[in-house]
Image 1: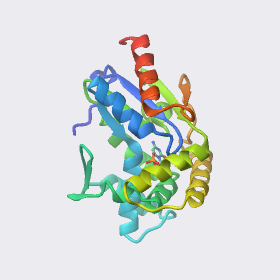
Image 2: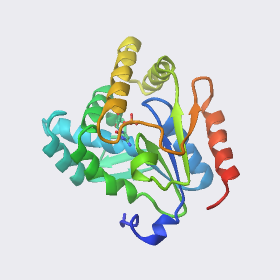
Image 3: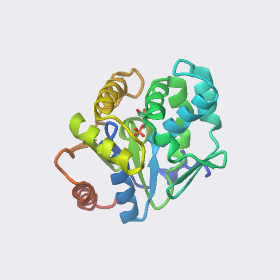
Length: 230
Ligand code: DC
């Protein structure tokens, strides 16, 4: 993919950002909004998860900032629909494991890793538009986004959703462990010094605790069409 983010044209490509805590449903919602609009989607969390997987395979841990940043810069990744190819191997299932997610949250706190992934994320800004989901899409990566959503939900509800999602994929998980992992990850994502999880300036908060996915997708599309083209 060619780097287009710094050209004046790239600035005219519309972006919708959807940030929020883990398991808030933002990935599914971002993909559906993108499909509806015929736009590209960026699952930025996948890049942190891929970095974590590469680090795990290299025998490193969350303290190894230089190695993690080097691996992040060198990630050989291709997104093909549901498939995520790293070095030619489909790792879409592997990166969803909780151990990888927890290590992703650790590497995401490392400034050199965030710097290594910044331009790579901006390169996803391609015509006709991009829906990007993550933690800092509206605050750091695409501060000029046309519409910024902050998607929140109660932690217990998110733990139940994650449990259901993992069981659906045949990955066994204990609900209490998931709940404490989510709480720890929330604390780390919100408390870190670099690009913490926050509602970006101008973001509209949607609490999805009592909303279905379709309701949230409709709300986002409604906000987009109410806003109109730039
Ligand atoms: O959205 P996710 O659970 O797949 O993200 C995995 C981890 O990556 C999450 O714990 C925090 C980190 N992350 C981040 O720091 N910034 C982003 N834009 C996306 C994810």
